[in-house]
Amino acid sequence: MSRPRRASVLAILAALLAGAATLVHPAPRALGTGAAAHQSRFPWGPHKPPGKIKTTRITDGLWLTRIVQKKVPRRIFVLTVDVSTALTMDVALSNDLLPGFERPTSMAKRHGAIAAINGDFGLGSGRPAHSFAEDGDLKQTQFSFGQATALSQDDRQVFMAHPHVTVTALEVDSGESWAVDRFNDGEPRTGELAAFSEAGGSLEEPPTYSCWARLAPLAGPAWASPQPGVSRDYTVAETACTPARPALGGGVVLAAAPGSDEAVTLLSLNPGEAVRLTWSFGWPNVLDAIGGIPMLVRDGANAVTTCTTYFCRGPHPRTGVGVTANGKLLLVVVDGRKMKYSIGQSLPQFANLFLQLGAIRAVNMDGGGSSLMWVKGEGIVNRPSDGHERAVSSAFLVLPGPDPGDPLGIGPSPSPSPTPTPSPTPSAAVPVAPSGPAPGLAAELDPGSTGGMLDALVRGDLGRHGQLPPGFRRALERFRSSRPG
Image (cartoon, rainbow, N blue to C red; front, side, top):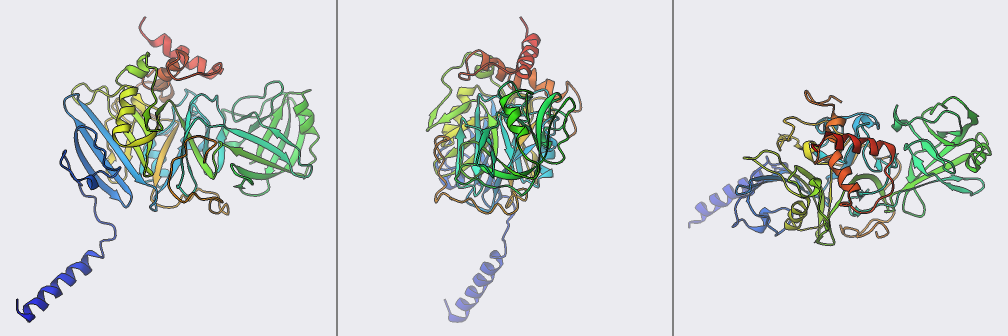
């Protein structure tokens, strides 16, 4: 090649490279299909589930994969999230309040998310079935029988296990502390101290005929020291025993039954003194947590050991969250109840799907007609079995950058983990549907959603549990009365 011609070719190549460097955010592109696809075409790693696979890059660190299994038939949708990128995980509560329902797409757009799936099982009242925290604010404690999924603030640690939720109140001057037995979770029973915040809305209000202390915020949330937990300081605004409900006044009300030791403690607080409330799910540096049941994969093995009820063994639409050994987060939805399109999966099959994707831990979320996946620019990518998007109690979100809802001034996690390694145990590191029943009733009557889950829980498929609270029992009764036979 002559020198002038060679120089011309080099100039063209340089121009092409310079132009390519300007493609900071390339358009989504298909990454490949079929068994012969190179492992780089599987964003979760080298593992390949059966079926025809097509992956689309949504943005840096986020991929959408569609898997078609024709013989069964089955349609599977996988969002793979690289949490080491600028993306962050978030959770959303319907309308930011316990009572009510909201579509996942609405919650996603309201939070500026780029992807979302439905969240925890929801009761007919509109609250999630498990304890829930968002942006450093504990929204509720709840009858604890399932699992929780949480990420540390820096997204370097993923927690999936049965949580140990605690709430404590500390009188700062004296150093005396007391356990808070319930948070936006019903009136205090004898010997209990209950807390109420504005997140309870009209569903959870301070009780009548109680003794109480109204706390006004003194500062924003801060990391508990030592970890784990989030603390917030309040000042005592008022204490009393009254037949009327005390006003929240933008803060928290601690309440106890009149004549109890807890009531005496509350009345001993002096207006103006500081009280520190601390909540924890048992994991360090956690601001957000969302529930689900059951554990699908534990320590790289199928964790569904008992499967007798239709909730477990029946093919239903499913939603779940998992994590791989290399720290990739998997958000998975399986369509169902469409015989020629996708029949769904049993829980053991759903657990095996996560294993085929390389998950070492995974948790089942609300399913049935609630199962939904949304991606910005793609819309709703699956086909909800109700024929439309069901309004639900909560959602799991992927944000394009830092979570703007994180408390200002809380700073980075005090003890960041050097590698994105899942932690094995807690101690280790509103529009409604256009037709059909109301969203809460639809979930309670759905064998793949809340109704089926409660039936499976009582029948022993989902592990041991205590006595169901009244709201859970009523939901179970409605489900069972709707079933044939």
